[in-house]
Length: 488
Image (tube, rainbow, N blue to C red; front, side, top):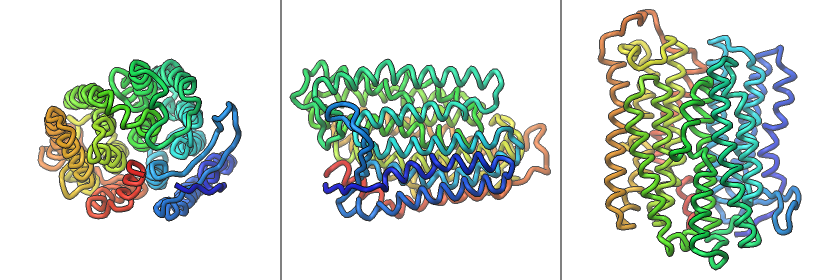
């Protein structure tokens, strides 16, 4: 792949990082502050989209900031996998920015300037992870994301928020420093480089036992992926405002964890080496536990956001499961599920926030009959649910279909059972919400005067729900990037 030196990858990161300045300067002028937020989001997506044709044509971009270790620079590189993730994150940030305006204003939230500024820094770190050329660069942006999202998790500034914030940092920073950092040092000592290289860099560089240790350290070290037992931060982080849960804990933060693990499997350890050592099989069996247990726990949650959080924990492991299959269809399905889950789950979180804005209801048992008063929101929730479950004609069907085919290709019928059972559990914890909203008698305390949330909340959830439908019919660009990433 021919990479050309360009400042575009750095510009894609800096546009929102530097954008925090006008956002903070405009603190006393909310209309201007939020105009800056949306403008920066659109500009970021525009810069990333400008690089897409070159990547689809087999090229890419690279920019080196500095060399801190021999052969290990802080370097940015736009390749198919990074472009795939950056497109998803930057596109959905536009709608999260619009949604945030409706949500934060409707609830008259405090410290809105800090909120929008922290969000801008977090999306910069997310794109930094996507465009990292090596493990060191990825690690630095990974930690930047952890620290920049802490003010968002603790936004409410009450005791519960502070406890959740401490738990969040303990899990996220503790695992990255305790597991991922030592794994990086072992990798560098063994291979002499940390560069992301198609096929991996560890073949012949370390013993099978060391490779197994590295896989364990990286999988647990990138705990943003929510794999059990290092998943407890995600439900705790639901104390944050819903736009934070929607984008960061439904899309950006959690997908950064999965993306980091995918980079390790594809470009550090290498699929062929893992297949030779049968470590892929062990990984798939391990994450299957998370898929099933998280789905069962989701069934027991009455708080809507916590149910969505446990759903996310299970869905993230689908992505790692696909990568661990090490078969063409399985890996394709795992990577494709990043996009399909992102659009479906952000829709569900948007809907949960819209319900709270309109009715101040958090618990599913209190939402009976709300669907008849908020039909657009509940129909969007229904579409998002169908995509997460994996039913046509929603995008989630494509990724889950590939996962099932991948399991068959890998001769792992146990995984087929896991995928089918978990999809049934997905339906069991989503469909009752929709049914109760449309067909149950109104719950006590549900006012007949409740109506849809403001347009700035309603428009984004409608668009993302429709995108989940569109991705079933038009997944071509994403599939092209995935094919180039997995089979260069």
